[in-house]
Image (cartoon, rainbow, N blue to C red; front, side):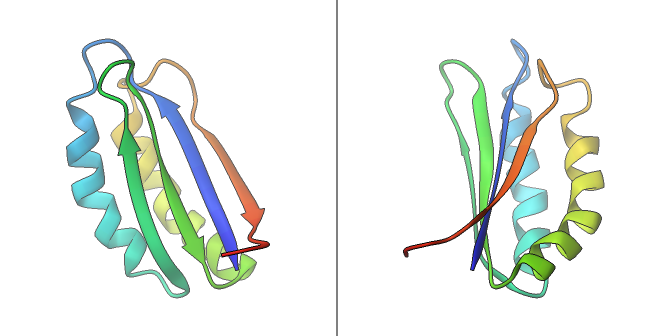
Length: 94
Protein backbone atom coordinates (compact mmCIF):
# COMPACT_ATOMS: atom_id res chain seq x y z
CA UNK A 1 0.00 0.00 0.00
CA UNK A 2 1.15 3.55 -0.77
CA UNK A 3 0.17 7.01 0.43
CA UNK A 4 0.27 10.15 -1.72
CA UNK A 5 0.52 13.38 0.25
CA UNK A 6 0.12 16.67 -1.62
CA UNK A 7 0.47 19.91 0.37
CA UNK A 8 -0.13 23.44 -0.81
CA UNK A 9 -0.66 26.89 0.63
CA UNK A 10 -3.52 29.02 -0.61
CA UNK A 11 -2.62 32.62 -1.31
CA UNK A 12 -4.31 35.20 0.97
CA UNK A 13 -8.00 35.51 0.12
CA UNK A 14 -8.01 32.38 -2.06
CA UNK A 15 -8.98 29.75 0.54
CA UNK A 16 -12.60 29.75 -0.62
CA UNK A 17 -11.52 27.56 -3.55
CA UNK A 18 -10.62 24.70 -1.23
CA UNK A 19 -14.15 23.32 -1.01
CA UNK A 20 -14.71 23.47 -4.78
CA UNK A 21 -11.39 21.70 -5.28
CA UNK A 22 -12.36 18.93 -2.86
CA UNK A 23 -15.89 18.62 -4.25
CA UNK A 24 -14.62 18.07 -7.78
CA UNK A 25 -11.45 16.09 -7.26
CA UNK A 26 -12.36 13.76 -4.37
CA UNK A 27 -14.83 11.74 -6.48
CA UNK A 28 -12.45 11.78 -9.47
CA UNK A 29 -9.62 10.42 -7.32
CA UNK A 30 -11.83 7.87 -5.55
CA UNK A 31 -12.95 6.48 -8.91
CA UNK A 32 -9.38 5.69 -9.99
CA UNK A 33 -8.42 2.00 -9.97
CA UNK A 34 -6.53 1.10 -6.81
CA UNK A 35 -7.71 4.05 -4.71
CA UNK A 36 -8.30 2.92 -1.12
CA UNK A 37 -9.38 6.33 0.25
CA UNK A 38 -9.00 10.06 -0.25
CA UNK A 39 -9.02 12.92 2.27
CA UNK A 40 -8.79 16.66 1.62
CA UNK A 41 -7.84 19.06 4.42
CA UNK A 42 -7.37 22.80 4.96
CA UNK A 43 -6.53 25.15 7.82
CA UNK A 44 -8.84 28.16 7.53
CA UNK A 45 -6.46 30.27 9.62
CA UNK A 46 -3.37 30.12 7.41
CA UNK A 47 -4.57 28.58 4.13
CA UNK A 48 -2.38 25.47 4.42
CA UNK A 49 -4.08 22.48 2.89
CA UNK A 50 -3.69 19.36 0.88
CA UNK A 51 -4.85 15.89 0.15
CA UNK A 52 -3.97 12.40 1.36
CA UNK A 53 -4.71 9.35 -0.77
CA UNK A 54 -4.16 5.68 0.00
CA UNK A 55 -3.35 3.47 -2.99
CA UNK A 56 -3.24 -0.31 -3.29
CA UNK A 57 -0.02 -0.13 -5.31
CA UNK A 58 2.67 2.24 -6.51
CA UNK A 59 1.56 1.56 -10.09
CA UNK A 60 -2.02 2.61 -9.33
CA UNK A 61 -0.80 5.79 -7.61
CA UNK A 62 1.42 6.75 -10.53
CA UNK A 63 -1.22 5.97 -13.15
CA UNK A 64 -3.79 8.09 -11.33
CA UNK A 65 -1.32 10.96 -10.96
CA UNK A 66 -1.13 11.23 -14.74
CA UNK A 67 -4.89 11.84 -14.84
CA UNK A 68 -5.48 13.79 -11.63
CA UNK A 69 -2.43 16.07 -11.45
CA UNK A 70 -3.45 18.21 -14.47
CA UNK A 71 -6.89 18.69 -12.91
CA UNK A 72 -5.34 19.62 -9.56
CA UNK A 73 -2.95 22.07 -11.20
CA UNK A 74 -5.87 23.71 -13.03
CA UNK A 75 -7.71 24.29 -9.74
CA UNK A 76 -4.63 25.57 -7.95
CA UNK A 77 -3.47 27.92 -10.73
CA UNK A 78 -3.56 31.49 -9.44
CA UNK A 79 -4.76 30.35 -6.01
CA UNK A 80 -1.60 29.16 -4.26
CA UNK A 81 1.48 30.92 -2.91
CA UNK A 82 4.01 28.32 -4.17
CA UNK A 83 4.01 25.11 -6.20
CA UNK A 84 2.45 22.14 -4.37
CA UNK A 85 4.66 19.56 -2.68
CA UNK A 86 3.66 16.03 -3.75
CA UNK A 87 5.25 12.86 -2.40
CA UNK A 88 4.51 9.16 -2.50
CA UNK A 89 5.27 7.05 0.58
CA UNK A 90 5.23 3.31 1.21
CA UNK A 91 2.76 2.53 4.00
CA UNK A 92 4.47 0.49 6.69
CA UNK A 93 1.56 0.28 9.16
CA UNK A 94 -2.14 0.89 8.95
